Length: 345
Ligand code: UT7
Image 1: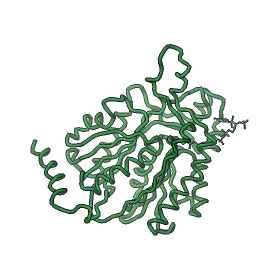
Image 2: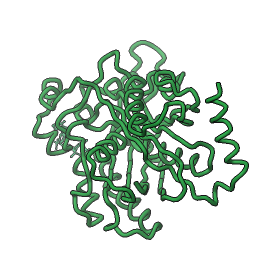
Image 3: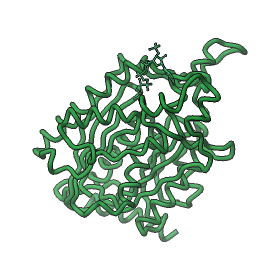
Image 4: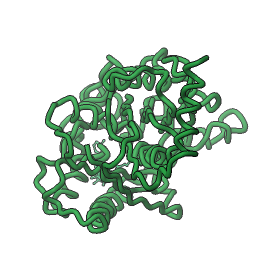
């Protein structure tokens, strides 16, 4: 189609005729969206399933309820709903999207990837599509990846999505994990523009990967294989907690030091919504007021790859962001992986 050849020309003539690196292109946030299933389970619902209480869960995690997808709601359908909202918010035509990147650990199918499923559902025919597995750091790593493509002039408009149906990967008899997780999707449209600012710090500690695991179902060889239990999320909560409270503030400090930005210049810190105590601890360690750390885990629980982008959508839609505001986004989780990014709104 002529639209497709326009995109082709747009991408490649830009690369060939201008020195894109000299231009300092960054992906600007131009639209956000999120979506979560209607069905909600509160802490009292969980107390009927495992030995726990609303009080314990609130105090130890900050979670009050979580959204739980029904059978017909999967990672692709949730991602597509969030994506449509983000594209609409950006005032863009779906055909303008050059890249769809989905961060997830709960793909509906291994193949085709979730991003291709989203492409089909929303009709973004000109997009290149792939998924990325970065566990709870996934949407941060996806944002970093999209920004690198945009900075190089390879794509102009990127749709980054974090989507998870964790309810299907949760052991609903394990009170150490099932109280934490929820389902949902968040999305952001980034448009390459001259100027602006994007910087990142990321780390992985593969040797600590055993602290948070999820075995693939293709490892199960026979009926009643004891490994079947491991196809649910398993976690050493204390170890992950200790890792998060030390490494997340460290990554943010390094990022701001490198970028020569003082804490006071940051409008909001958006942290992965795993546990309210982790976020309060990070705020204390940075010496920043907790009001600069918006939270929504009370309503969503921990949605892994989706959490940062659902939160970004809420902050954008709150109307409290102004052009030029500096945001820090920080993620941590399975891998173990962690990192922080700076973006100018
Ligand atoms: O997104 C990926 C990253 N994941 C995370 O960031 C999770 C990080 N970890 C955590 O958020 C916390 O470690 C948890 C919320 C998972 C657990 O909190 P904790 O303060 O570390 O509790 P704990 O595991 O040390 O357990 C304390 C007590 C234990 O009882 P005893 O041994 O002291 O008698 C547990 O058996 O609380 C008990 N317990 C519970 N009690 C009621 C553990 N889970 C529950 C529960 N309800 N759901």
